[in-house]
Amino acid sequence: MNEITKTLLHLVSDWKGSFSGAYNIRENGCSVARQSSKNILIDNKEDKPGLNIHILPGTTGETVSIPACVTHGDVDDLVYNDFYVGTHADVTIVAGCGVHTQTGERARHSGIHRFFLAPGSHVRYLEKHVGTGTGTGIRSIDPVTEIYLEEGAVLEMDTSQIGGVDRTLRKTKAVVGRGARLTIREHLLTQKEQTADTQFEVELNGEGAGADIVSRSVARDHSRQTYFSTIIGNAPCSGHSECDAIIAENGIVDAAPKLCAHHSDAALIHEAAIGKIAGDQIIKLRTLGLTEEEAEEKIIRGFLS
View 1: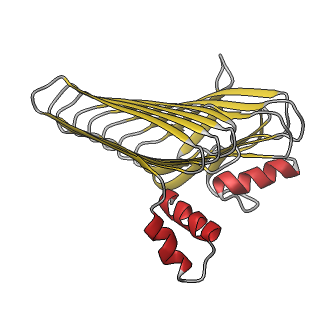
View 2: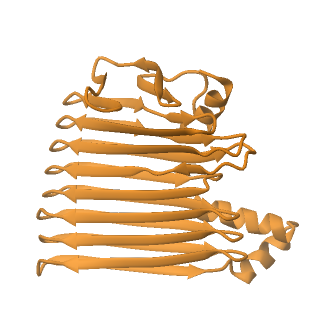
């Protein structure tokens, strides 16, 4: 691994020189380090770039990390990773991504992740994205996430873009079965001329299925964000979608939540709020000795946490 990879790993996956448990580190389109565990098996796909990760039934308390790094321009990395989670497994999956360029050439990573959760399984999925480097090349990260939850399965997804990404298209699609539950928390920051497009589509197909999707975002400078969410209730189920955004300077946010109730006992709700930082919040923090800029930064950090 090169030094830029090590820096990116620290930013997106809290890497401190090594990983415990199962892991695969991807650098510029190649696997540079890998380790399976007794209960988590990582193998290459045979027909396309990427991994098959099998988590054995009953596995508990383990973590699998699969960070990907692009460390220079003129790299367009595409990877397909499939996770097969056995019955009653309870694990954490970390899948951060960082892109870096020091030139005028584009650096891009696209990760297509599919999750197949067997009955009664539970996954906590952590995903951080970041762009670094002083080059003028576009830094792009375009994640695609597909989630399939069987009866009683639970997936908790925490996804964040913590800065430096110039272009991103974030697509998440989920099919939720009987008694299964999906929770998504998105944290998104755009600055300068950056653009970010988020698309969520969730089908609630089983009795007692549930989904709770919350996106918090800040659009600063001349950046632009779009947010689209669709929840489809095909059974007695519950679904909630919320988009909460702050605009600063000349930022733009377009939000379009959509609900489709295809069953009389589908209980669906959406909320959307877009606005600037409240002036009384700034004044209160300034009375504590902060400058206006420091107060604004503190509010934004708290809002996105």
